[in-house]
Length: 617
Image (cartoon, rainbow, N blue to C red; front, side, top):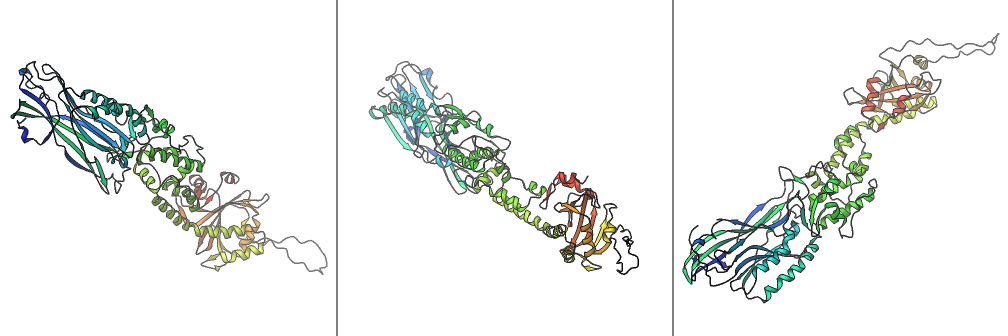
């Protein structure tokens, strides 16, 4: 290290004098503090720093520049000294008025006693504050005080001992081994330090010693997209002087004393590679066991919540199936955790897993893929969306959960699902319209009215309105006779011999595979003759590729006992322009329809129970 004269160093004199022989003194000198500012940005995915996304704590650390500086010259020193015990210390006074937090801590302590090189220099790493949420932590202020004694008229070492006793609670470990936070528990820290603070106050007022106090700038500031972390650095020197001759001083740097803030986005969660807290693959119980350091010792998070003095303390074992109860306790959980000092990431991770046992919460966060695969109708989706826990969670809370990798739906997600559902519903609108009209016909027992209902519903390109292509793939159940039922000839009243005349059946040609065009009266005869007892809703016809044919539907029917078709079957109908162009009687296995019922229980708002299908076999 270079040799400097005392006049060339702009500093504050802090230490006691150590005399070797009768003419040499040794002093500890601390330069004026310098500030080094570094920037920090909003976390990825967030537009600004809002004070609720980080925790901050202050740390004091001494960086030695040379381990043997104080020991140099010891071999030349004699055991005679002009003075006895010598001591000097730099003490921090840390306060946060909003949290009612006050404490003192020692930056370093230098002590020397009569004898040959009998000295100590103690400068340990200190945590000046616990983790404090950034919006509260920015209010933390630090004053530094220099105390020195060369005449044993003040016991600086005892002063430092009392300060350290009061601050022992803040020598904290990091995440994973227990964390300390500052929120509602601030009062506990103050109570723990009150007795020690009374002990340390007396020397400040009555002792004769040299001291100097200064305030440091705020350690953290933020606005918009930019935050600043201010590190304060003191250069500490050892100065050996030849008696009162200032020109004979020898200055060597011992090291640097630093006070710097440290920020962290979460105390309960691990981090992803981009620094965002990762809340995946956890549970409420797992988070509840997270160790927390408090003034009374180490407890877990669940105990900390249960012991909270907040008037809105949540019930950690609510009625999991009651939406109102869950929403109310969610709100309480949010208030208590914020009061305890947790930031938005830790709060929302705990809240997510607290709500995860509730069915309405899981419905609200249903995946888009599931709504599509289960063909959910807009009414069902809207019912899920309506239970959004709005009395507890704001849109920003959902955005935070999503940023942590949790499967939640934001307003934008719901808008997309709703739009997709409405678009798909529009695809089924023509089918549902035809279904309603056709089922109305099939439930009508009056054949003449059936014909009137059918005429405007039917159309073929060949024969126009009132006609339809009829096909039979259900087997021989007498469809030809239903189209052309037997007629009874009219017998003259004045017949010479009155006798019963048998029905005369008009010969009917078999219906070809491609079908035959019939009119509304004939189709009414078929429907009436089938003796239908029960009908299912109509579903789109599956195309065999997991999709649906857009202009064709199929419904199941069960016939009355004694009807022409035992048990029943399926009725396929094809439509165009709001009119039915083709009707085909099918087996329920047509186009793998039965398997489609299993793969897609509900589609287009139609769900056919398996018991209905079983009655066809």
